[in-house]
Image (cartoon, rainbow, N blue to C red; front, side, top):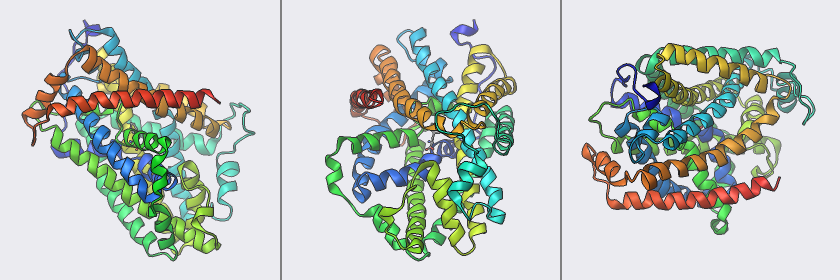
Length: 467
Ligand code: PHE
């Protein structure tokens, strides 16, 4: 029956390898590259952060990216179905549960990713008359979000946030309903080249602003002492996993839409290095702009606050835009870029949820899209379009993106490799049409990564527990 994962119709497909690569890059490149990576690198050793970052990328990120692609492609299913099939007899409910865990984390991330995209869409329009320019902090918190007192819960909707938010959900539902090739793929094939051009223009402009050099030296000056700090290494692993959308079931799902005889490893490398290149590009753009702001305000870059996350995009950047020549144009460009980067990532998490429901209940993409979209839209509106909005974001981010995915990654490795004993089978599968053969070292590496992740989980749980 359906419960055992009978796939309803023929599985959908990407139109080709390039389409898959663009979609996977679309998932990987997101807010994490633009507002997380630069600030993270700056805090955790500057130029020296490149060392733990590259180690985490090569020793953990890429091997796990191969694993997820392998599971999705070999077992041809959404996360729950593929994870179930990856277990010893291919029928384990616990294995399926691992996939549902991934789906649950996707559900949570979808709720707040949409909110950020909605804010960015609003700010795209606010850029034309630069209405945020006079007092960016006050404008964002009091006039736009209309936040209440921290800690107070209120269900009063903020119309200026609610409507854009529902708009983003409507667009997302429409794209999902069009299916893999006509919806998800088309968004990425158009969106990703546009996004790259957008950020090339932004970086070129930012680099030529006065003070850009100070920003870049703040970002790249190495602090090698940071390498002795365990937290810096943990941060690098966390950044790589989040950035490559690993342990969310996304890459399993996307790989399941590739044709049977496909090269899995080559494109995975393109995705990994393409994603890191975009992070560098964003880092250069962001810190050049911060250097300019410091220069304008006559302070050192080190004295600037708000160099990452929500603050960077919605408070610091508006301040930069307010002071630079042609600010309206570059402001609109920046927020348009944020919308595209966000939307292509959002669609990947929603497709992961939608695919799971399609495999489980035999629904078609349209039904699934509406069910996922409507439920999520209501919850995200209650969570983020009310005067309580912003406070939730931090809590949600900590639990789902830090603890949730580490557990999801370890459970995935345990199900497929430790209990399922699929290491050799997956290694052979990944080597069949591959540009290169994966050695046994790959399986060993994946096991080591699991141990490192267990360590990370414990240390993070201890810190979170201390709150
Ligand atoms: N990789 C995205 C980013 O860097 C975030 C993301 C995580 C997207 C998981 C989808 C799934 O912003």
